[in-house]
Each structure stands twice: as structure tokens, then as C-alpha cells.
Length: 257
Image 1 (tube, helix red, strand yellow):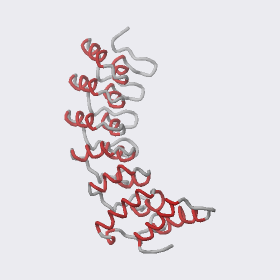
Image 2: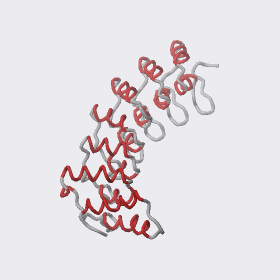
Image 3: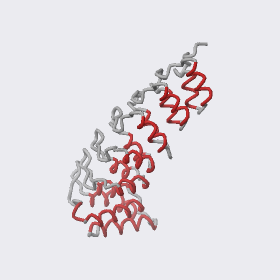
Image 4: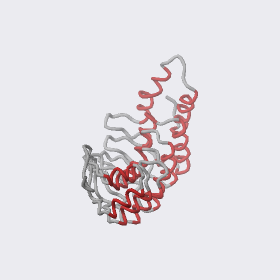
């Protein structure tokens, strides 16, 4: 068997060592000149897999052996993209950045950065680590979604809180004309609504346009009524937290629907 032989998944022994956090095996393979640049059928390298499995010591070995931090998999994601999705990975993020990883690299398709993925997956610690190192918190995706808009749309409370603390733009608008208020009205849980309400009050309610319309010609009020209030009040009973959400949104907007 050759040191760089690839299996049916395209994975080499080094890739398997990285994916299973086998530091001693990885060290031996590297001493035998295992190729750190080989990728599997998903175009993931050993460094990608070290990030996914949080194999810090293996990652250090790979980087010491000139592993490329910018290799992209079939989705256009670098090792930094991968580790941004994994909880409590600040130390790995800093390791990659110390070795020159592109902090705002964009993936294919959606053009999400590592910070976008941290926001989308609710990884507040990772998001703060990226922001502290200069990641752009306002970088838009192909649909003009900022990290805050994504976090609201997918109900990621930890990263909504982190982004608000970092001063994320409350006036961001996506390519469908949806504002923070549109997405809050349609999707946000009570806790996110509470956080946004506090942020709006701190910044001044006039910073948000309650009359803005999306690509369907709807205001946030109309989204709220169509997507939530009519649905919930059409049922026999309304969950307490949903009723609180209605009241808080109406208070925040200064209107009653």
C-alpha cells in the first residue's frame, strides 16, 4: 500500500488520521512524506477534516508541513469555513488565521464567508473570534443577506445577540427587499424579538423603516399578519410565548394589527 493511496471515498491515510484525531498516526505519516495537499472526492483536504473533527494537534502538524489554508471543497468552503460551523472552535479559528487563512473567503453559490456560517449555525463564540480578528460582519451573500439577517431568519439567538453587541446594521436589506423587521415578523422567536426590541430602543426606533416593502409589495406589518398573527389566532389557543411576541412586536412598531 502506498502512503498516499486513496480509498473509494478518495481519502488517504492522512485524511483518515485527521478526521479521527489520530495525532501520532498523522505524525508518522508526515514523517513518511504523506502528501498534505491531496483531497477526497468532496475536494476536502486533511486540513478540512482536522477542522471538522476539531483535531487541534493534527491541524498544527499539517500547517507545520505547509498545508494550504485556502483549498476549497466542492462547495467552495475552506478549512476556516468548516471550523466556523463547529461549536467552541475559537482556538482552531485563531490557529488558521495565524497561518494566513483568508478571513472573508466566500464559498460557491451563496457566497457565504466563515462568519456567515458561524451566524447561520448559531456559533456565537466562533463569530466573536472571527469578528475580533477583522471579519466583515456586514459582508452580504449573493442574495444580499448579512450575517444578522441570516441569524434572524434561522432563529439563531446566540449569534443574533452577538451581532447586535458588535453593532450589526439594523437597516440591512436583502435582495428580496426584506429588512430586519420583515424577517423578524415572519420567523423570529420571542427571545430574538426581545433582543431586537432592546437594540431598536437603544438605537432609536426611527432607525428602522416600518413602511419598507419587500419584493412582494408587503410591509413587515403585512408579513407579520399573514405569516404569524392570522395563523396563530386562527387556532383554538395561542402559545403564551407567541402571544407575547405579538404584543412585543406591536409595541416595538407602535401599532396594533
